[in-house]
Amino acid sequence: AQSVAQPEDQVNVAEGNPLTVKCTYSVSGNPYLFWYVQYPNRGLQFLLKYITGDNLVKGSYGFEAEFNKSQTSFHLKKPSALVSDSALYFCAVRDSGRASGTYKYIFGTGTRLKVLA
Amino acid sequence: SQTIHQWPATLVQPVGSPLSLECTVEGTSNPNLYWYRQAAGRGLQLLFYSVGIGQISSEVPQNLSASRPQDRQFILSSKKLLLSDSGFYLCAWSEGNQETQYFGPGTRLLVL
Picture 1 (cartoon, each protein chain N blue to C red):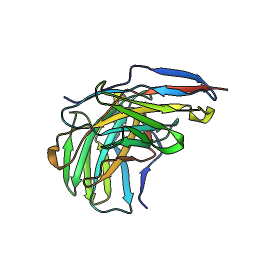
Picture 2: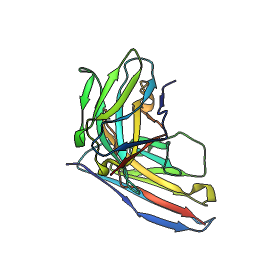
Picture 3: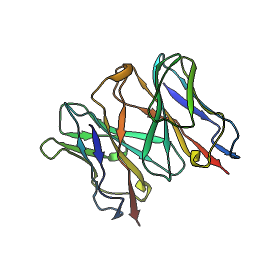
Picture 4: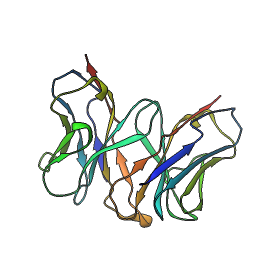
């Protein structure tokens, strides 16, 4: 069965420092991986995805993620954190089985990022 | 461009009352539609998904039901709310074989 793990409930980083939010996955077949961000009382916003190709994927707001097949990881990164990056971040994987005509998505439990001024 | 709407934004309902939450998508045809519940600002639980009008798949047996009366309309309902139905309800859509899901702004439901 597909699964996603976000091992850190919270990550604290100083403004201007690089940040990493960790995600590991378990899938059968080729993984389709996603990162979303959620601000308080808002829906999830799509940041980036890995489907195939380059292992380093660039997304919105200066975020990027590195796909590592051997470590089954898809960590989210940003070279220089901003206070406005403080939010809840979700990693997700698309289920490889196309049951009932569509795909299902499995989300991690989320990591709260706090960027300190 | 595509947009997704949810209403109401916030809802406070007594236990035992009915529920109807609505989600509509604009700018696309025949989207795949999804209802999620998020408890305590954390993980998402998939409740229902739909690949077309009248086609609903349920993920978790519960007090809720879903319907899709029109191509771009997805409704989450309950006949009698429970305290445990409180949470943040998110609607999402994806387009055919496209990989990415896009989320609506959510509805916060408080059952008292």
